[in-house]
Length: 238
Length: 117
Image 1 (tube, rainbow over the protein chains, first blue to last red):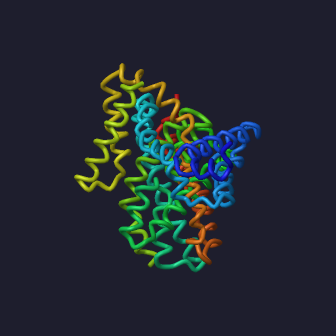
Image 2 (tube, each protein chain N blue to C red):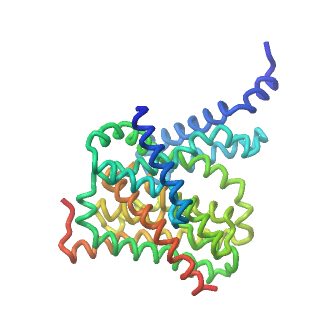
């Protein structure tokens, strides 16, 4: 019989182990989410990330090794964005009909996200590169990183802030919108997509298909709008 | 299945190539999504080919953020001594943006007589 270190060294070289671990951690996170009656605070992404981070830490596995397996899951982010076209296409008549409310909510939500983040951070003493890294945090990661580089931010820090924003949005959206007594699924989904990009959109799909469709739209539109306004707003806070 | 995958990847590829070639300020997959909407509007058959795979992927879209999330954990140090201020900015601005965005949608929808069906 081959001993454990030998099996481990074989497995840790290929993508199989960490791909399986990623799916297993998410399955467990999702089971917890369902067991907790789909309470938003029991976020499956958060649970999976925490489990995997602990596993990597105790097995002294570098992130690069983990990512060799996890990249297959990560790659699907692109195709998933393309797939958002289907709910959008199904809902296109409703989107056309709601053009004005959508435009108003996009402008208001996007401006609020950038201005309030910069105002709060600056009031608490954040300046320079860190402030620039924060400006695009409500948009989807590839766009946010591009904006951050263009305005003198740190891409790594922006990536961290983008993910944290998404998880925050996914956790707070449902209780917050219930508290505000907003029942329109279009409004709920769209505002969540604008404020919390793909992670907010993923959450919206868990709640209601209409919310998911409008969240995907909000994410896409805000990627474009933030690229235009973030550099201008940042100037006001320099 | 293969046809659906081909359509998805082709849209993404065209999106990635065009956004880079034209230096557009949006990610390739978002342009790919716009192209796919146009294609889906043109072809009801494509909608039905795409439906099973799109529902499978979108139903578990959260999973796709796990690898990036794990990467973030290793970079918490990048937050430095400003972790508290950044956390306040993220939580505060996300709550405000969702509130203002959703309230604005509802207000304008009511004002323009645009209730949902």
